[in-house]
Figure 1 (cartoon, rainbow, N blue to C red):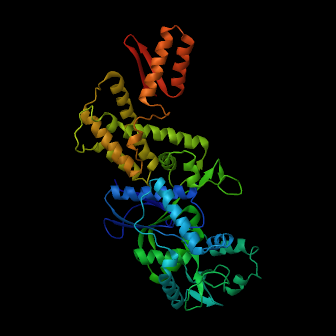
Figure 2: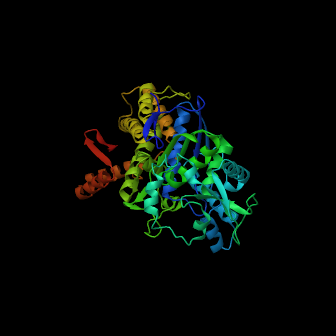
Length: 481
């Protein structure tokens, strides 16, 4: 059961082999902290959180680094509008980031480097690029000479000659930055200070770093010259990740990352999410509307991580129903374990089920396939729970049920799906067992009073909420569909 991953760099699926056996060095290009995180951030953070969890589950020691971009024009613009400072804006939205991610059950990274805390590493890398002939100063700016790096475009598959043909009619030759460059494709490593903006001293004069150099420096400072996984959204492939490769590999002569992994984008009702379309949704807005964070996780995991995903009312409703099913299975042990005489020790797992889960997910992190295994376990436990409620016993042995439940708990935990114990009396439609029994009693009273219209109404009401009633000589039994 070898783990294989689709590598954006090679455009094929490859066996996963780490630089150092048994250890994974993983870097995720994090958020630019000028606003609250949105659904796109939620998808990326959930995906890479689960990738990390899964790698740990199959035995790897993972060092996971996620950066914050805290120097950016968008941050400066917001600070200007709010009559604040770049640092204050960044600090506020970093705090909000941690609040939102905690609600989604995302484990914290091992470290969160910030660009403003990596200035020495950034300047050192620019200096090395300049010494090797890959960078040049120009009126206080420093630019990367793209044509000096022969492999430029290898990640995105873009060729300079093709880009040149499409760019010639879009270049503004009067633009000041264009005039400072030796070539239109060159990009900024260091930007000269502008009036009213924060700046740092450097050998090229006061200024601030370009976006791309920040990640190259943070990867190198925290994880070394070559890492195992470099992750991010598909929108970062070009130019950001392409430029990272050019910067880092020009200096070290080594691959920046063995595997480049990219998650697909989020659409809303088939359209790109944007504020101008009015379909821009932040994580906290979504959760404050009452959606269960676990349902949001489930929604993200129902799609292959590299493909686009469409957020619709129907999709989140389906994910909510799916989460209720898994939650019922997760709560089985708390509801019935004592009655079944389970011991306090951990039961052994269902080896065949775990193997099937792992074999499925090993195919390029096939989390939707892994969810299928979880649903099978959860539905079986829900069925057994209904039998226990209505017949007082089950034909399946208590030991086997404990193994099923323990397997579900462990595998759900790998995907970050956890049920709160206090929710154990809730069903997927919000009705508790006691509430269902009360409805059945009301129906029985209506039947005794020969009020069959009311009896039928209660039956239909329960049926609409996924509760089926079965009348027999021994009384009325029920089960959840």
